[in-house]
Image (cartoon, rainbow, N blue to C red; front, side, top):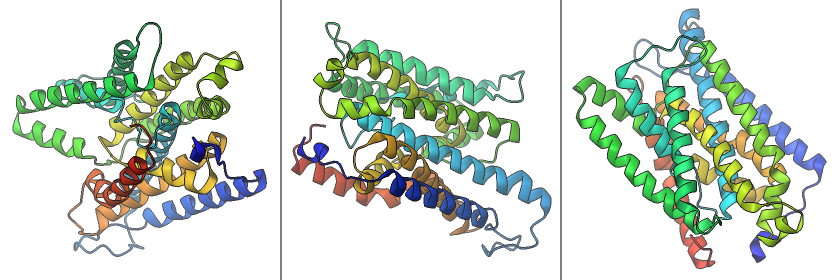
Length: 339
């Protein structure tokens, strides 16, 4: 609790300046990323003469998708860490990402047509799976009318394991090309999407981000203790249900677009809090920007380091963030924070 109460004082001007610098860096990074890619001879040097068809149909959509995925992961991770008051929480811990992945795994092999160009089958299936698992987590964790944090975590871990088992079962019964497709997607791989789908994904993520940011003052109250929101006439359990749904909606879109990109939602919010403290009015927007930067540069490295061979971005983020996660886990255990 002492660490939580030691909030860093960051004036609105300094915070806004930090956010503006982050957005400028993100814009500059996107400008660089769309100009980096493998040449036809296999090298990964910048291409000034890249054909317009490749630039607009592959480069720009992929960079756009990476930004949206990272943005959503950063916000969802910050929201769940504040909700559970645990620096090791993220959408994977609560099982909603596993539910989204199971939904996509069940639906995509059937290749059902969606009658709207603005929505894809993976988006619908991922949201349905994430929402179903969110309500399952809520139902399993609810004890005598209460919604304890440890119940949410345990229910999420169990449902995540169940989702993984069902995904494996479904995968091994498919044909080889479908197994390969699902395997690459589960590792985490960003693919360029059609512009209508990108617009839908961006609008979806922004709407739920605004919903999370609107509740930032309530997150600040919850960090101070369970009794503080109650003293203000708020019900912590109802707030947790709302945040569970918001995080599930954000995580579902990331799974639909890029599969299971791990560690971003866990590491980014923690790193942001080291800079700006525990005020979630500041943590949530900065986590979005930093998350977008992390996924954007991870994807850029994934497609250029060993060009023309691409590394799954999920494997790269896990490799880069793994040591930091181990340090964070050791630090958390030494400080006696409950997992």
